Image (tube, rainbow, N blue to C red):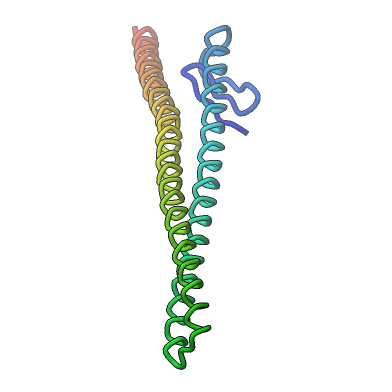
Length: 175
């Protein structure tokens, strides 16, 4: 249930009035606040979507980095094994293995670079989505604070009028 506050009414999903808040002005404030809350929810959904996209990009990068590390490790292990007992066939096979491994490592490094760029892009989008959500939340908070100030001013004016009215009533009765 959304809480909507205007200078004329408090809306808790249905209308409850405080002060003198009937008519088009109250409905305009309700409509404005509804659109603001709707925009806030939409921005929140956008932030969640950007978080998922950034997590997916980070996962892809982690997978590529793990595969790259495994490929480099395999290359190192093969180099250590070939030193144990090199034969002509083993050396020829090792040369082809190194060639394929290095090509695969270059490919993985290119994929890693692209994945890093994608992650950076997604993180920037997430930061922007968070900024936009915060802006909407700040607007909502500022509206609430403005209403509180107006309400407190109206309450103070009412208290002043009630006090003066009571004072006049006491004066009339004392004469």
